[in-house]
Amino acid sequence: MRLLPVQWAAVVLIVIDAIVIAVGFVTGTAVVPGWATVVLVLASMALMVLLLMRSGESIRIDGMPTFFKLLRETLPTWAVALTFVAFYGGWLIAVIGMLSRSTARNEVADQRLWTAFALAFAGAVLGFAGIARRRLEETR
Image (cartoon, rainbow, N blue to C red):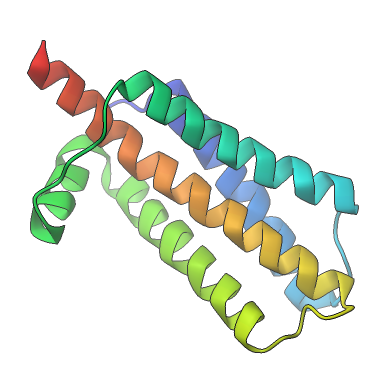
């Protein structure tokens, strides 16, 4: 269960996103300039596009039990945990940020919101890349 290069890139992005979010929470200041936040989001989205292009077709999964089974079979335990924390944590932080309307004219909250989206995308790439690889190997 070795990770693919795209999964290692997702792990690096997850770590960077988590540091930006955590330091922003603790210090209350924007950790990186605005352009760096855009780079984090674009890098996560580029990994998602790369994953979709390399998989060649859509990834069809027959429900959540099958999804969890495939994740456990294709990723090491630490990567499964990181996938869940990154994906669900990223969306939770983003939704709370949007619902609280804390991003209105607040650079730190705005950075946290966009970095949370990047975190969720990177978590999705980490999880689905292994499943996509397995599906490709099954069809060959």
